[in-house]
Amino acid sequence: MKKNKKIILIITILVALILLGGCATWYVLNNNASDNGKNNISSVEQTNDMSPEELFQAFCDGKITAEARSYYDDTTWTMDNTSFQFEEATPEEEFDASLAVTKVDPVDLDNDGDVEFILENAMYGDMCFDCKDGKVVCFAQGEGTAAMCSFTQYDGAYWIVHSDTTHGGRCTYVLTKFNGNLEVVDSFKFGWEDWEDDGIKTYYLDDNEITEADYKDLYDKVF
Image (cartoon, rainbow, N blue to C red; front, side, top):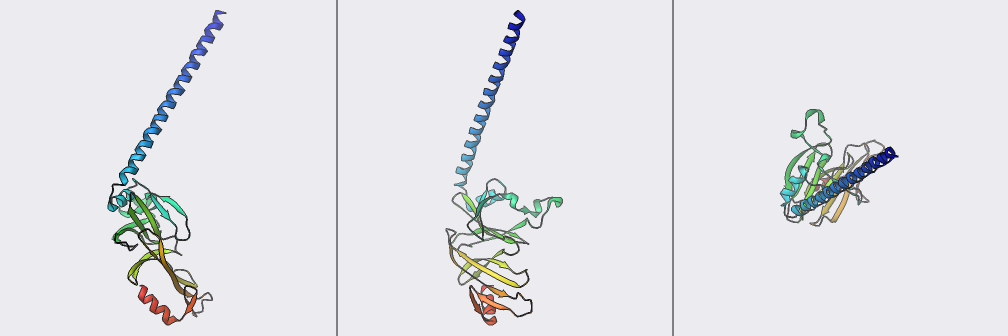
């Protein structure tokens, strides 16, 4: 009988210790989560005081993320600095030409008087970043070889260009003009098609067929 009581007492103590340990673990985890939440909030608040240059550098350094927007539709996603590589900071065995970028001089790509920041990739073209109000937005970038991104100055403004010039049977340029709110205020496309690959090209501007002379004249003005 005494032996049974002793066993019951030991079991009771063990259960109590397990419960106490579980409560302590929950308390620690809960407080850590709370502290992390406070740290994140603090980081967000700190970005509001950053200059555009500081925001862009913080993004490049992996300290903050950016909102990325698709050229094709209204899709958005969160982008971080794992989306690209700076060649000088990447070990040779990890280097990927499709991700390698260099910083180029900032340009007022949305025509609002303030410059945007640009990372250039040899394969897919430019990644264009608007940095203000505590956040970074990648509002234009290359999305495959059928949508290589660049920019040009045309008709008194800067335009984002997505081009497809490396595939057989077609050559396409899509120009998009943004305002300071990153809204599209104008756009058009032009190019040519030769699906039979017989050297007889059909030239177009938007949905209208144009002459070769008109195409060349527009090309010279745009680029």
